[in-house]
Figure 1 (cartoon, rainbow, N blue to C red):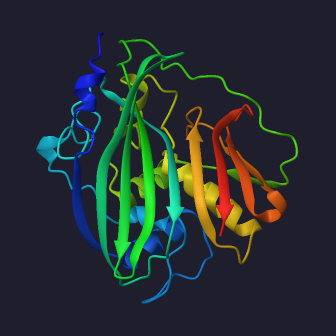
Figure 2: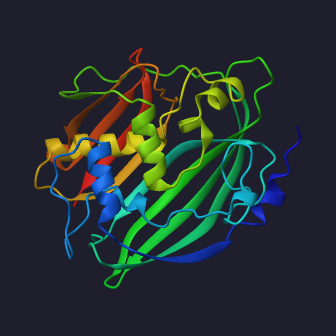
Length: 286
């Protein structure tokens, strides 16, 4: 299929603004979903890094949803010629904490698009930049990367890219066991309607995956928590995650990491059950 990238690039700069309030209830849901023993922030308290994703839910009417459950219109992205969507990575910069009770404003802008060729065929990479403000000013800047892929032909399996092994010296280690309940809970908390995360029949029969797909932001939160548990008292300044291969609920996966630059930063990886890199992360502390 010929893709007119220039036509897509004409939409760069499209933006919209949303309002929300940093409430406490969804934070309780995140704590139990990830089995965290953290004290739940109360009014005026800072929320944990990464927990901002429970705000600004994408409340798209049912009539606007595509076969995969995701909205086909209403956002900043133009219609894409490829139907399959996957998380490709994110960059987060934390300027100031969000506090429970804050009135929130989020600006979302379509900032980049490119056509690439990979082992799975032609790929369209699109970037949305989100800026979240509290009454005190800019809190978080988030660059979210999405990859659009051609549909899987009937009866074929989705090709999973093979990636590199992580370094051997990673003293931080944890095993993550997902299941349909935890993935459904996370989908519900973030109001993510993408069927690959909770509809096993769709994920396997239509998109050719071996099971339910673990959300990119789900593994993102696991990695943030691993770094936070091994760096008590440090303030997260930036977090960059790149997706290298998908993770599924068919087997537990590992997350590993290590401190770098005399504790000024950290490197982390989420690993497939075979031990290859699925996600790679770089962290900097304030």
